Image (cartoon, rainbow, N blue to C red; front, side, top):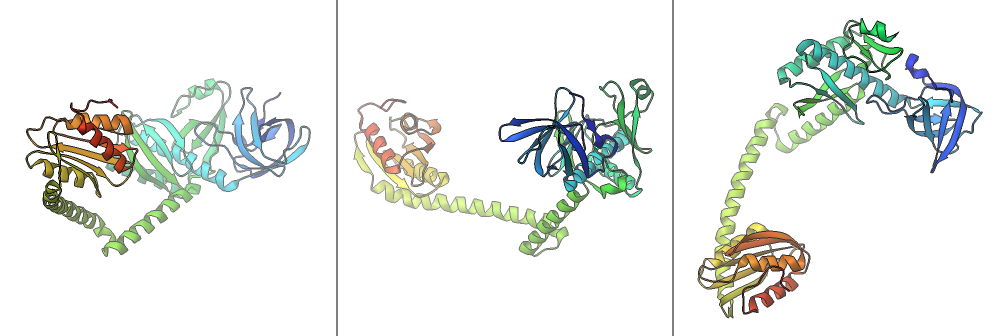
Length: 406
């Protein structure tokens, strides 16, 4: 089967076209369709595929096959082999991809020219795109690169499509050497960049609108940059505007005062947490007295077996306070499920908290650990009363409980 004539190579702004169906075959609930010519871009080179319709059928995916053809995966009604069909490109998606891909060429060229930072990979996502650099740049350098890229956008520099043989390309100042053979398709941002590329691009940089660096992070010894062009940049700006406006309303401050206001709230929250922790410890000491006074007599001392409404901090504080009195062994289980169990013993008792907790975890699941005098376990999949009943059985045994024993 002859290779598909790829119209998007020379006419990236084409929105619709006519083509003959060369082959058609069922693939599950979709149909794979090959055409003699197509304007649908297949997933390739970091750029996602186009969407649209083919003969009225929705195009769900476009791929390259092993023979160098382009296969369109379409829904019903799928066109049959031999017929001529009309193809319509989802123009909003195509423009978005052209903006991001051209923006990548521009940003990569600017950062390499200014700071010798080479782009080693590119990913065009659904909401933002990223490039990975071989070195890390400072925020000031990134801001300068962002400014330089936008200056080129506002100059509305032409973006040209050229073709060259391998030998001709070797003599050209390509930003990156191409691994392809035969005739190469080159994308030139006039006076800024020249790269071998099979993707779709805008006709001039002005169509990018603007280029914004949204974030950056260290990545594999270099740096990953997230960037947005065109409508994506506008969408992100609106999101940030709404977020800032919401924060300003809630905190009753000016936008420039948000960072110190948030720092102040964080400081106040830390202080409140410290005060709450102190209050919980004081309250636990009072509650521990009542629980200890109601402890059950046992062979080796007295035992507190209770279901407690509270989180891990509350259970640990109560258990520690109870164990601070002589002759007591406390087993506290949270009322919420999955359950948390905390065990603590007074100095001088020989029953192991760790071994009891291990036995409970073995029976009811969960993970935990600790010491002979204090241990805990979370994630037990059983009602609190059932866990306490099991603990009571273990503690009633003549010998100390052993992990895994039932």
